[in-house]
Image 1 (tube, rainbow, N blue to C red):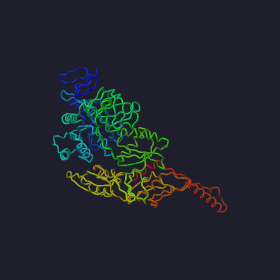
Image 2 (cartoon, helix red, strand yellow):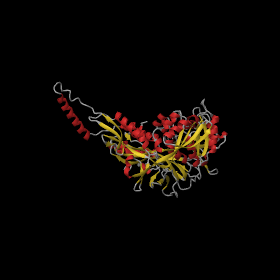
Image 3 (cartoon, rainbow, N blue to C red):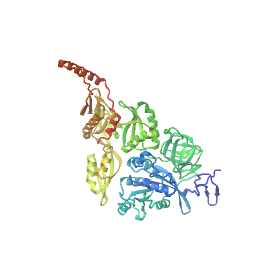
Image 4 (cartoon, helix red, strand yellow):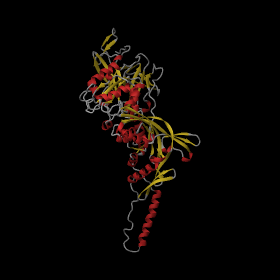
Length: 628
């Protein structure tokens, strides 16, 4: 028997009804009221202890048994565990008793790296509050501020938590000063905690219940549910994760996805525990999943709205802003026959990583592939590794570059994502490149080194603010192309790991750019072409030629490797031919006998060079990416 109650969340078959109090009792769940739901996420800079705090919260609420538990339990990808970073946001529901009331806490653990900031923005849009974790040994860093502003823009209730209080080098008083300056809160509002020892975890749960508001929404209104994530299951189709803003959805309902106008049956709905737990019904404020047997990955879009077919909502929920890729690279299958399989793999990966963009392209050197947009170099590396591990796809990635705007002499404006898409030099009036505003927070002693690095990268300093006597926030304007490769690594190196870095795109400016081409045996390898500032072209061209000489195997003929700007060759290396000793059989006699054989060999090698093909091995493409 199904019973619907106003302003309550009916989760499974009830066993006792009390109309006087307008509540119901469930044999498994207990009292469930909409005001007993809390949706919150955990935000912080990289390595400030988000996933460890999440572990302690799951243990404290009994969500995990001892058998299921492992460190960073929400980081369920091998690659996350190996690197010690969170790549995906992970949602999970906890049940917690406070006094005589049972609360349902929907927690989302988010990544900290700037390359995965889109994951954070989607998680924040699904919550009413956030735990702001700050490392007591490091203090406030760039991504702390960036994620905090994102949360404030979405009107989230912020609970500051000072983590790693058990460490000997913790600086609680100094870091509390930084937090109070940033948030304008009282010192007593800051919770002292340790993800390692479990200190302060119970207090965090009580503060979540006390401070974070319960979700607002009308369970009787037409259904409006926001899709914030999805995954592909080869057996059951796509699982879409959603938060219900208004309305109620039941198992077996006929639902519609607004953006695609596709209609489905809700074969299974449920909540996101450690494993998916089916429910009969979910209502306003709930976070859960829906399985409808959808097989085509193009039919589910993150940010879409789910509604009922027979009683649709008036308008779709405002989804998320379209993500703007920062870095572009070509991804090609090693075997050309795997092109369709690569397309399917990228489409399925995009379900789980909405910040990935892609479109088909072709290359003379590599055949058919895809031009992919990433939020940064780490994001590109992770996507490449996930394609290999999760989909068993062997791929070649071209030199990454950013997008430019080319203005032609005819007055046309062309957006260039690929160096081969650049018009002829004679037709270009000028080129604009993207610039970013970068915030670097560092110890005062490293300010000189950080400034030198940014000036080397064509940066201009805009602002310098001392947050405390020993911590400085530097604001620079830099070309995006200059930070794509090795900027972050060098910044960490010169600051002994203390500097933190965050950036956002600030617009386009005119730049003196050229296209650097690599020629093998006088033929251009378009996959190795790159757009760059003229001042850097010679040095990089020289390095690429030297590196390719080491990696390309020797042929039966001389292979020239040239770096060119337009028709001008700026660097050259030659791979010497493998030589057979054709004069070995000539013993004694006149020298002209040997010369005759050598001349014959020379003609053969010349003819071979004209028809010979030089294949570039995959490690050569990868090595070019890692050029310092």
